[in-house]
Length: 73
Image 1 (cartoon, rainbow, N blue to C red):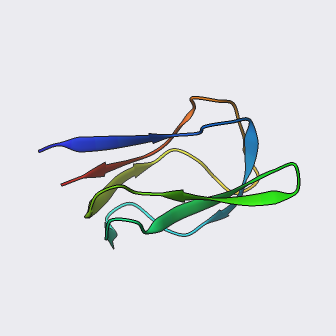
Image 2 (cartoon, helix red, strand yellow; image 1 turned 90 degrees about the vertical axis):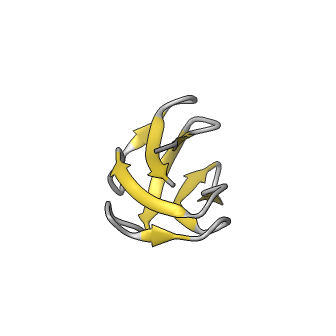
Image 3 (cartoon, rainbow, N blue to C red; image 1 turned 180 degrees about the horizontal axis):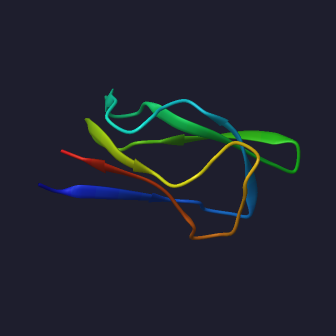
């Protein structure tokens, strides 16, 4: 089983969580929406698969490189 790790690309806060572990996702689906400098930033998965772990909660502040989720296929 291969796993995609999805990391924060910048300092931001988690505005909205759209998935939960166990959910099937398609390539390009939005997993969470981050907020930084009053801009909404969707975080997408690159491959279809299953959300294995979600490492964030709404309102949490992330640093660049923090793990957001893992998706397996």
